[in-house]
Length: 325
Image 1 (cartoon, rainbow, N blue to C red):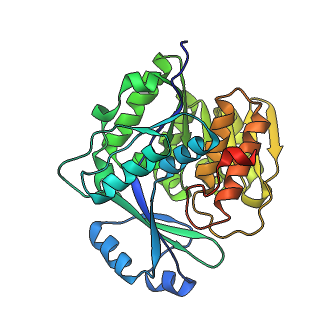
Image 2 (cartoon, helix red, strand yellow):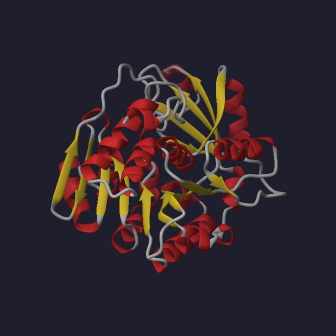
């Protein structure tokens, strides 16, 4: 296998985040399930945006956040995702390139506008996400540059891509190209509701194609339809090659065959916003993994990144993560 030009290639939904604070009453009025990620249409997006209070707008998307984290550690990353040739699309591309992530996916010149995610953060730091996919749904197999896939040690994707049939085809093309080039592939389960929609497909992927699996406690128990983390852990061990499973304040557990590494959470003075915690954990883990670090150290790096991200509003690092290790 030749040396890699990139540590991680991320493939995801290119989304601009709109983040604001809200209380439980607001969620109830708009019939929103706290902590969930719901797909919404453009009409619903406009109505919610109009009802939301003041907020901040920043380029996001689960995988985009992970790639920002990899870059913040000093890693070399590339990204594939679809935006439209509009203002938000230009903002998204500029944000990634400005932090050193390669992003050359052609912009759509027609069709839906660039995607956005309306994120409501409640006082308990839970985030409720309402996503209008917009131009994201245009991502397809033709956007996958197989030479780029072959130039990355790991191709990492978000489970959310399974909501768009053409994006799913794009991911499968990338996975096959990665393995053909002797590279590795990784996926995050993204959300327990997403798991519920694609449980059987995700399990088949984990058995047959995925080298490194990411998920949190709710997602992994949903995937295997069990009532405890310990049961989910043992079910995962039978199907996944490597799995890194996060448990909020309990830290994370990494398994590989019969090996188990339980790593405590990194200290954080105050939890402000949990948006992006799993995304940044994956960034730290993959940064360590692509440098051949022991799995427990990969998990420690993931915990450091997650602790930084939950200490402030927004899902992109405010402090250089390489300075925290």
